[in-house]
Length: 167
Image: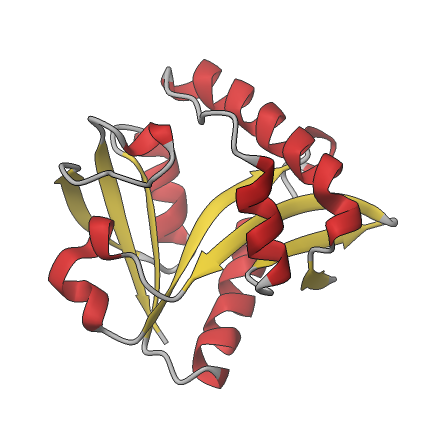
């Protein structure tokens, strides 16, 4: 079941991001920074943070934005939602949550009069690129990040892989 994350979930969310960051480092050598609790709280309060719940446990989380100028540049003017920071509880890996998120995102985008669902990830993880393409995204290539002021640390001096799905 996909629902908005609530403030009572904040510790579970931060724990999932820590586990995902540790896992990401073992797979790609890149890890997420420790995300500011206040950033997650803002996303929750703005109804832009979501979770998949399985057996009353937070199994997967992610957030969305309605713009992403620094990553998408001129394409940011397109009507799109941007998915960020998908993190899955290791006890629930292999349950195809990204595929569920994609189906949810297509519906959510249509309901909000958007034409695209977009994502980015640190470039170089071919297995992840292939998986996102299998989930329906087009891989648009890489972008070297230059203006990263205000973005989480993992964007600084990074090259990002860009993905787009037309809805």
